[in-house]
Image 1 (spheres, helix red, strand yellow):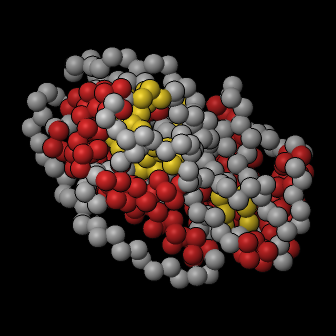
Image 2 (cartoon, rainbow, N blue to C red):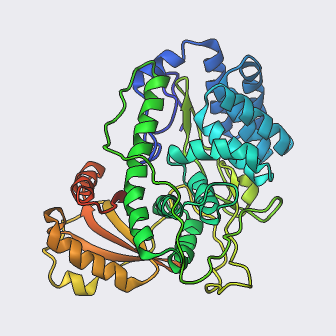
Image 3 (cartoon, helix red, strand yellow):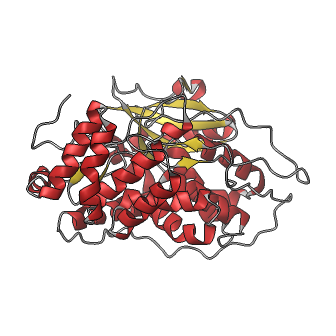
Length: 408
């Protein structure tokens, strides 16, 4: 569909995890000639005229427009309208990131990490993880589990990996299964609780960024968060494996980022090909390896599958035992809440049995066991709207249980 002069995107529904700026800001954006050139490039890209798009973006990018700089980075990464050149892509990501383009900063940090420049990458990785970027959470969670390029903190590592898994990153789900074998139960419980706080903090951070982009002052959200615990040193029952970090030049997975907004201009997620890792709009991302041979290794992970921009949940099987006593579920809806992800199905059933008795917000909901590789996710629903799911999660979270609203 062709865009109108006042419409910057085909849909305001970008992602359930990323805020949408107001229409007034978008209307203001088209008044700038530079931004008009950026939009003309976006229109050309949507028509498949990649060379025209790149030509439209070059002048505003040279003049410092962060959106145009980010788009050129994407074009060079994909080799559309220009020869593929990852160094050029990195350079344009860096320029846009230096001007405050959040999605460019996310990509730049991951590109640095993938290029084995990890000391340079980690400040960007940490900032991206704080904003809730799942690939960055996966990298930082791995580093904190291993304790090599980040402080060793198994509680926070488990929390970060839980959040990355909840957002549909399959590598994170497999890593959680590995962590379950080595992190003591008490620390995993703390990690699950911390994961809920990390999500609240990420939402607040994204709201502040959206407000800053709109010229608004957004007050800090009072979350009642406590200071992060110091790294916990524990005596594990068995030696912990080193979760292998992505190696430079390795075969890599892709996870698309949603469209970004900077200075009010919407930049589309560049189309991707399901058969080519090079055709991803996001930065390529490697999977974790298995533990070294010197340690007891878990069963080999299945062959990696590149996730879609919004991964479809596997077919959910109702929890038979819990369903016999649970009140009737809501009639329909596209939203559920997720209460945990476990390497053992029995733990999911046990958690539901306890939560159902203790929390009135779960009354009338249908529990589901959703398989994701070696992980079993405990979900409940359905809910007609995201707001209704979040309201139930807020009630559950007050008891200390991690809870996330997800689209089924």
